[in-house]
Length: 216
Image (cartoon, rainbow, N blue to C red; front, top):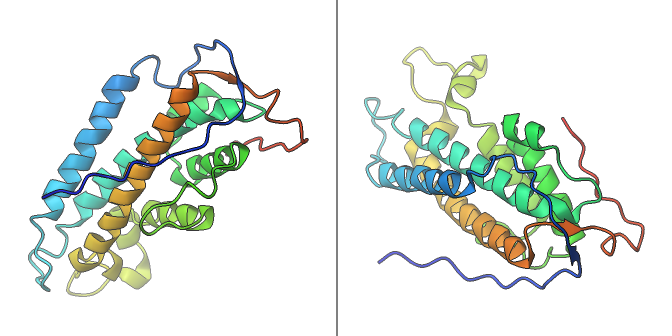
């Protein structure tokens, strides 16, 4: 029986609501959310079919899982940035958000959002106990592009064996962490969206703190 993801409770930030129609998805948030969910579902389905025993014939079978999780996580990160960047002093540019594929950059902005709304203690799940661990997991996923990993000289072998980090036996435990990460991103985005589609940062920055994102 599949376990339901935990229901996370976030304190409500003190902010004022205002209207703003700028979105990176151009109004396609529902469709993109469904697509991200389908990517995640496909990744979990493929994970269940993997042969975890050493086998040269199936050694590369886990690599598509990495790509499915990578795109699913990217879309969930963008959704959270879109819902949460209203709490920053300067809103993230929607065109830049649409075009970027940098998971590390998206994670950087999310860390700024979580600090701005003071949810550091709530932004946790299995495998992630801090913002530093969140950033480390995202960076690990971004570094696992199968083509880039295979192209590193130190990872190539005469028998064409898959690099160690892409072996099915190592991808499966990573996938469990990514499942929890996606649940956390969804819960956090829902909590922010429940506050209001757009917010003003005037009250948020009375203490002088500025979590302005750095565009890369």
